[in-house]
Length: 95
Image 1 (cartoon, rainbow, N blue to C red):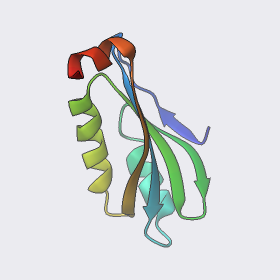
Image 2 (image 1 turned 120 degrees about the horizontal axis):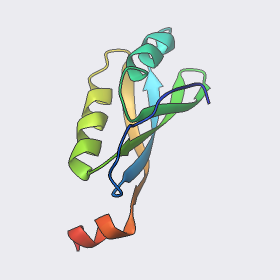
Image 3 (image 1 turned 30 degrees about the vertical axis):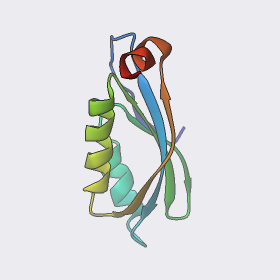
């Protein structure tokens, strides 16, 4: 694990999503520093200027808010959602 500021969630309901981020050439470390300040966002891998991150949040709205913060980091060019998982009891609320 390269860096982490894991979520301090107490809720049993969790949305877990993963993203591939592409950074501005030469600014990967700036992106990593900004991401490390976001609670619930964890960097799992870096290859060149690309980062694999996960978001753990208590709701879809919270997940969306964190993903939006990623898109506003100036050293990140693209934010691509790869995977999103809803816990079973949370999924039922959206049927």
